[in-house]
Length: 204
Image (tube, rainbow, N blue to C red; front, side):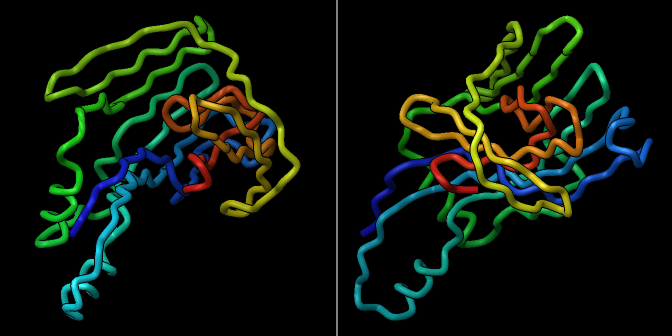
């Protein structure tokens, strides 16, 4: 028996980082960041005693990955799907099973692009819901990030953690002061350094 329990949308680890201009972090004028975004699917599977079947379900991916890319300069940033990503979609029986596990829940809007203009202090997001696109514009806010005390290295950059609450979820962002811009993937921004990874409830 399979029981689907929840679906989470996660922004995951940075794949590559490129600076086309200066090498000194303080002189950086723009850049491109590639991310992996993970759509986690949690489900319970009750073993049937059929070894082949049980092993097949045990080896199912925990979710779907999609490539995302962030372009930025001193004033603007654009976050969207990366058509040149090396992340490959699931195919065959595994792809069909993941589709089935994703069904049965109320449709949720999925962020397609996020555009920020720091000079005007505005953000425009485009969501897809049931094949329709919706544009949402709003003023940039100052997210209530709480600085942490942990550090980790991502692609050779020293990153610090910061967290905040979103309903009952805890969002943890890892940002690097070595790249002094306040951008990040999607709706995650507002820290004194570029956000290179985000965790929701401890998941990358």
